[in-house]
Image 1 (cartoon, each protein chain N blue to C red):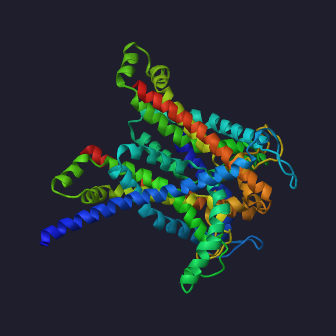
Image 2 (image 1 turned 90 degrees about the vertical axis):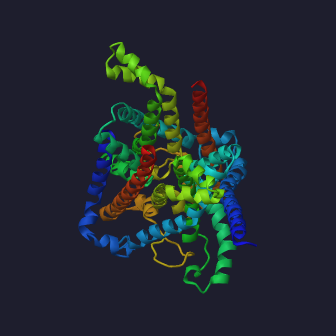
Image 3 (image 1 turned 45 degrees about the vertical axis):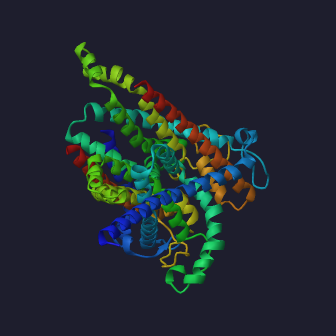
Length: 284
Length: 286
């Protein structure tokens, strides 16, 4: 074999080997996903019945019961988070894309990215010092604030990206009619980008629904029915954590069911997200 | 504007909260290795050790895999395969960490305890890394869970970075008779700063990851070379002990840990973002 031929063969073999290795890596990456889904579904399905959604948790020793309070609690908590995160996120995003051609805006943009990397437990600690300490009690409000802070980066970035997609001609048309810039931004640009912004909101909400760490010492958890935002409130994620650590077989089972319900909830949110984005790109 | 104030406010609040412990322990907080709530001596070294070791080991495991995934998704895969696979990788990122923890407790830990750890201590028991009783709960479980959780982040950002390298780079290489892999190597070289940035983002995530780690790491402030031994991370100390912290000093030590975590993740994420940005800007300019 001549040297040049040897190199050709060698580079072809290396090519084949390396390219199949990347495929193998992808397969390995998918395996845990399959396992997690398999176990969550197969173990969670045993308790998945109507009782789980409409009944309250039973005391230790009694089997059965549900997590109605936790499901409602999670919804209220992400709602509270949304009331804080959505307006701030949309306003910041609008500012960045419409008025964001200066130094300060790039600092804000940078900080938004940094904020998205701050561990959620740290945000929980902040909500604790900010709200739980002065009010001297754990409350759903503190949990909502923590979730709201966590939503801000996601919603801000999506809003900015979506508003950037709005064609300049639409803005110019508004301005040419003599409409002031702020009004053009709110009534025309935001309305055009609305669908995209909604996807950002759903994404933020679905992430917040899966958060546990910031709720541990803010909303705390509650074994009873509670919809008061100044009281501790139950949530699915904290239930999963508590029930998974508990030494009772029955509770462990319910933790799996709660995990399944949580994943279903998040999937519904992100599926809506996908459907909205898809129809958006079709119309464009 | 609000975001700017928010970050400042967060730092300030935590500084206020941790003042008692900063005054009491000073810099010694970071270097003392005793974490003893009963006697009110708080040194963060064991938990910092646990955090750093678990995150770095997770990165070492996950990095080759994530880059492989990124190359496959960006360079090799045909479009009909790339779309669903990308979706699956993103799905992996969307699973709440408490669900990872649940899976860790009931599936991964028993598997490690009954199969992997006895095997490792049997074959490599003379190494310090694989000594001690195989409980299942411990550093090894945390490392594995973390590497699963960090993978989608590094993989999806690296994929985007690879895609941002202009097509002409690949075409030039291919035109010179390079194989696909050789062309990919050139693309990888171009994308290096971005991939490094993605890795840092993954590191930031691993350091701050709370629930899944807390549920499987064993939660004992211990510095031990063995992967089987229980350990502790900054985030999991906070999650585990915050509601139990009875004294002012205990609480403020935990808040100081949160402050340390906050500063570390800000630095890591800041650097990472700068790298990814500089990368994107470079190609936009050319």
